[in-house]
Image (cartoon, rainbow, N blue to C red; front, top):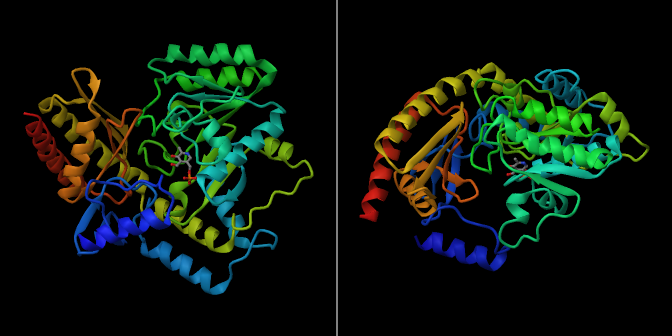
Length: 416
Ligand SMILES: Cc1ncc(COP(=O)(O)O)c(C=O)c1O
C-alpha cells in the first residue's frame, strides 16, 4: 500500500496530470504471462480487458523473435530487407483484393494520420464524415475527427471540415451519411469508422448499414477508411477483420494495438491506386516504422494468431461468454444489453432507463478485488468492456461469469 501511494505521488510529480489510473485501488503490475497479469505482491489477475496483448502477454515466441532480431540488426526502411517484405506479403494476404500495399508506422494514431494523408492525396478533398462518439487517436488532427474527445471534457468541438453522423440503430440510419455525402460532393474526402465502434460501447452495425454508407461515400468521390485498431486479427471470431462481417471492402485499413502484441506497431494497408496518388514526389519516411525488430515481432504475432487458430478459439469462447452473460441478464435487472462477437463484448448497465455509470465503475472495482480485470466504455462509461488477450479460455469465461454474478449482487446490495 505504501509502495502504491509513493508511486502515485511520483506520477503526480513527474508526469502529465491528465494520465488516468485504473481502479479505486490502483494496481502495480510487474509481470505478464498470456492472459494473466501479476502484481508486486505476487497476486495473479485474469486479464479480460487488454486487447493489445493479443496473443498473450509476453508470448514466448514473440519475445524470442524480438530478442533474436535485436541481437542481429535494427535499422530502417532505407535499406533492403526480406523481413518487411515477408511481413507485408503475409499481412496483405489476410485482406481482400485490392488491399495490397502496406505502410508501417508506430501507433494507431500515426496510422490514422497517414490514412488521412492518403485519402486527401487521392481525392484532393478534405471533408470527412465521422461517427458520433468515435475515437481515432491522440494527435491534433485525430482529436478533430474524434467526437469522443472534441465533444468531451476539455474539447473544443469539431472543425468545419468534420461532419458527424449518429451511431446507427437500423440500416435506414445510413440515410444520414447518404444525405451528407450528397451535399458535400467534391468536398468529400471520405468516411472513417471503426468496423465495430468500441469506444462508443462495443457496437455492432445493423446489417446493410455499412454497405449503404460505403456506396454513398464512393458515389460522391470519397474513400472509405476502416479503423480496425481494436477489432482486427480474429478478435470478433466469425471473421479475421470486422468489416468482413458486413460484406464490404474498405479503401484503406488502419491497424494498431494487437499487431505488435505490445510492441509499438501501426500499419496502413490500401490499394495500389491510392498508394500511387500519395507517391507524389514527397518521400514518406518513419524512423522506426517498419524497422527490422518491429517487422520480426509483427510477423511472429501474425504467425501465432494463425498457427494457434486464435480466431476460431475467440469464436468458441465468445459464444460461451455471451451465453453466460445472457443468463446473468435474466437474473440482474441492471443488465440492459449484452452484445458482441467473439472476444469483443459489451455489457450495458442501466437503471430506470438511465446509464448506470456509477454502478458500472463499482462492478469493475469489485471484479478487480476478485482478481479479474475489466474496463468500462461508451459515452456514459456504463458499458462493461470485455476484450481479453485471445488465449482467454473456456474455464476463464466461467470464472468471469461467476465473479460477475457476485459483483453485481454486491453492487445491488450496496444500493439497498
Ligand atoms: C479505434 C482506435 N483507433 C486509434 C487508436 C489510437 O491508437 P494509439 O493509442 O496506438 O495511437 C485507438 C486507441 O485507443 C483506438 O481505440
